[in-house]
Image (cartoon, rainbow, N blue to C red):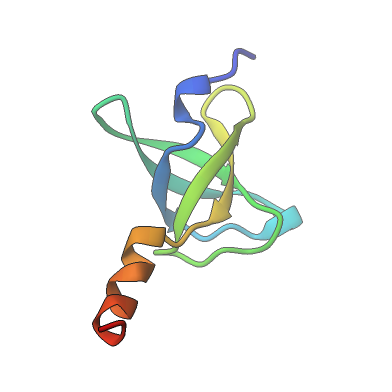
Length: 83
């Protein structure tokens, strides 16, 4: 199956929680100017609503994901304490 390299590095939201090695979930990924759904595989279970980063393409409409926290969002809360 051909891999979809364009999706690697994109972020998305888990629509159906992943089950780790027990099976995939579903993710909505922002890619190519829109949003597309893929089967999502992860090393550890991820809940519905989790933000993820696509780290690999597993072929036709399947991706590997990890949980993702946007570093810019994380900085937002700390800047008020800095000054």
